[in-house]
Image (cartoon, rainbow, N blue to C red; front, top):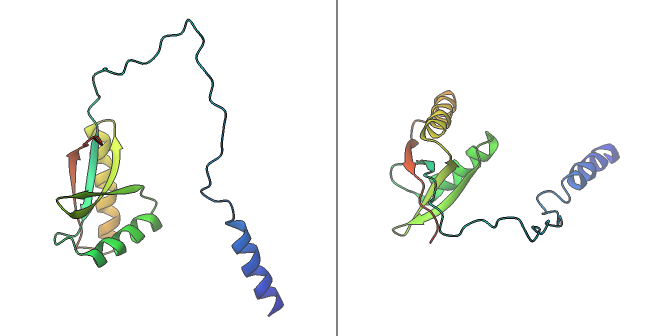
Length: 126
């Protein structure tokens, strides 16, 4: 019993500090260096929209848990009052399509036929 408790404590303590940001000093540009332009043309980016066709809350929570378990990074946005799960953003449409293919393959292996995915253009936050 003591060994089990010790193992649980070690595992619990191993996760301490996970996800905490580390403050690193940012270098200040020298006087003669050029500053980034604020009015530069934005680069087109892509996302992969993932989710059940009916946007059920329980299905989205199950989906996000599954995505975490299988190593997919995602974020959630609210569109027209509904939550959407997105993978990305990706620099090119080809990268997004490759991630979508990998996702589709893993979903098929897991027999999750109730999930759809679609490559969409990334919408910048306003």
